[in-house]
Length: 573
Image (cartoon, rainbow, N blue to C red):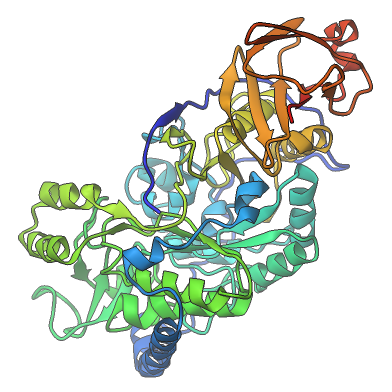
């Protein structure tokens, strides 16, 4: 469905502290180059991968594409925007309100984004370290890790000895989350599962375990919905070509494929392949002729078929139109294979959909290299997907449509060793932010950032557990609710039950002694109660205004059911 932009909600960043959690305290230290460092070289270089595996991979990919086409021909949903837009957001997603976004991969080893590097969203991006180590983060990288320490040297350091999938699934449950989305495949192309389409995977490189399989199994035993994070684009991928990109190329039949628009500094769309440079950053990637058809499509199908996700969380739709990257075919396949069996949902991060005339125009402008015109065409086009996904800051959202914001407790996407209490949300601020999101019909996909060993900082653990404790008392006013006619007033937030029988007023300020609410219309004298408390609540109507008196004992926060706020339940029908 087309998403419009109407309501503005701003997340404000505050400072505070949290109580300790667990028996072992863990506060991250600055990662650095091991004294016994040895450069990482995979057992096959890119040329050998081409010679040994490319033909077989492309044949298997052709078979997978035929199966996708067959399922889509027979299925309800077709790979066109008009058909995909008919898909409805399932109730489970609208009811869930809270998910966990587990941001872990090779970038978690260096774990760094410099202070002041926050982008336009307000978030910072340690999970882009592998790319930015040669650009924005170069001075830091060369001084800490060494200029000779290349991207793939991080792979053997991602041992994950402390990564406990059961613990993370249980932590999600204790936090009150209803779904989990691990970073199954980020932009450098490392997959969290054992893939048959790339050797750049968790079993072959890094922890030597199928981390995604573990997380899926741990989530399912706890009734957590599972989301499949999948980047459409990769920063670099080796492709088979018919001729050299330039006269200086070592091979006439190989090049490096990049995102079509090049919104970040790099050649577009094909660059020269130089083994000495690229074999230290694309280890395990098997060259193909068509990045999208021979690799990205079957890799997506493999993940869907193996893990049967409830949600697909696309990312990396930076510039290649969704219909050029063949995403509509993948989305239709995902919907169709689930149809009649389970309710599924897709976000809107796969890229813009251009109609036939604009796609033709886009391809013509792409050849001319006129970046501004490309961007103009792209930004005017509509996204495909079921719901809007702002990042870190929310901006404009339509409260009549479901949406989801992703952000961390700190500004960081990915482990950042510099994160601490001072740059992290306090538990009280986290609760307030979350309730504000829910009141405006949103979900919070809360990012957690384990380090390269798999450990999560105490700050993040504590905040998750505090949020979960608040939800144990006040969750009735959060889960399965919908927006009321008033979302916020005087720092109080409002939600309503799906059947409209109850209005919930979330009070997070201890200074309140009375509150006045228009158009509330409580059902009867005993219509207002406090979740988790037996205290009686007095109220009176004065015209359209209902004046509610907070119990005298609640002037002392120690009498609240939870120290981060309480919820009034108002029967209105």
